[in-house]
Image 1: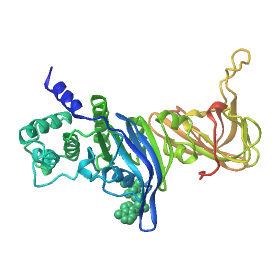
Image 2: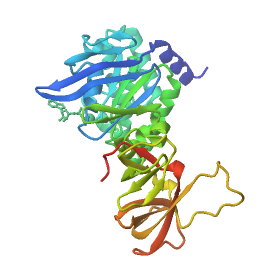
Image 3: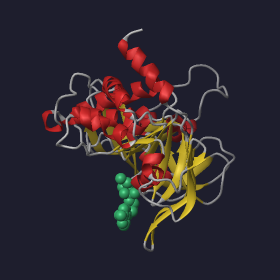
Length: 380
Ligand SMILES: Nc1ncnc2c1ncn2[C@@H]1O[C@H](COP(=O)(O)OP(=O)(O)O)[C@@H](O)[C@H]1O
Ligand SMILES: [Mg+2]
């Protein structure tokens, strides 16, 4: 067995199955509730992303698990044990924050050993555990350096090694990549995904406002908005069937149009444009129509070849004028204004060899199955 495999095995052996449960957790500062009756379960070994805009309460939720904020009501459980009254160092967690937070006057080695010493790990074990954690994050060979002698990405690897050294059942990460540039971010995401595979018992709670991080890394995403949990599901389910306009716009990009039900499988935009939608048994009154840009085609749909069949989705074809055009390398984003209301739809299509001009009249089409109706609200 090579060294790396041995380290991975040792660390796995030390990880007790974690799992986190928020049970009706409310946190308030004075009169302001910043986490409101929050319920969420992270399974052992699961990566859960907490995704939401700045100020929505993500860090507060994480700090409630870590033990740095005390809930006003509710309980936090780790590995099935109620830890609400336990101090941070007795919760079996590791934590990584945005700004590395390494001790500048300590070498990498001492930084990674810090939590082990604080937990009174026997002296003879510490060197091995430090080496194991540094190896896990690809930082073996840097043990003697000071933080100032490392790049931002390397410092963040050391911070992750420090968190892993205590062999936590739960790893808490608060925007761990947001201080890194785009290329380093992509590399670190791959590294975190590898850690997730190598340490299958480790639960991770990963706070981010960046949907691409959540989509890449998370088994499930919890969407937060103004102190509340809005939606929770796999990236695929939230993308294909978001529960609200808020989630639709936060997980992937979305066209969101104000609409009104007008039948079992159709809605109407302002001004009477009728749109066939994904069969859902219908509804009544106001609604929000959601269509993903890449599911919209430009021009007339390809003609039916053969007899009509129930398997062929109903196409919506709408006519309008181009109000926006963006080249994105492999694709074009074409925004079309629909008369009479002027509602806009953006289509993301493969790069066009001869893109339309602004003001040009064009058609757009999309399948009824790709037109999802959400509760009203959330449109621009
Ligand atoms: N120590 C504090 N005292 C008072 N208000 C705070 C404190 N920490 C956070 N808040 C407020 O709580 C809300 C949620 O903050 P936070 O959990 O940091 O959000 P996020 O991580 O999603 O950006 C914000 O409105 C923030 O201003
Ligand atoms: Mg935060």
